[in-house]
Length: 215
Image (cartoon, rainbow, N blue to C red; front, side):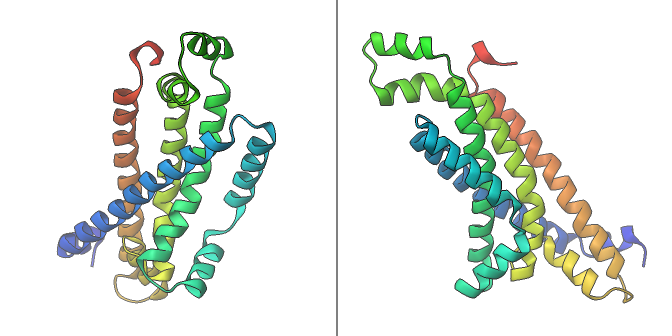
């Protein structure tokens, strides 16, 4: 059977798997953004805290996703939960690192001026520092989104939802009927979803960035 015939015969299943894959990545990315930004806000004013956070991020990103997911299975079980935990772990690291860089890059004179106008630390953070750092934060979010698309496919290793199941199924049946078609369909699907997500995040970035600092 040819590839296009394979897709035509299974387009309903492929659409369902694609939606599950996109949903898993999108929801994990939202959680990653909240956690990564919160951690950055907690440590960015401390040189030691920032250094520890960046070191943790560098080490965390070197951990093989297979290994982490395997540990999650041992601690929790198979299914969606270990997939989400793994994705949120990996997704939060680039966001945290970029947020720290962005917050550090805010002009200290502007912060002092805001304080002089009577703004408290929280108000200054919320109304000045985060908006000015936001383009760099969004870059981290886009990087995480692309990374999580690939890791979500590997999550099929622990029976996570999405297109990874097609890829793993095809690999396990190499030499069998439609094995290659299954791998190619899953891989192409992940690539298409990655492009769609990046386009959406690009629009979100433009809509949420103050006009005065848009590139």
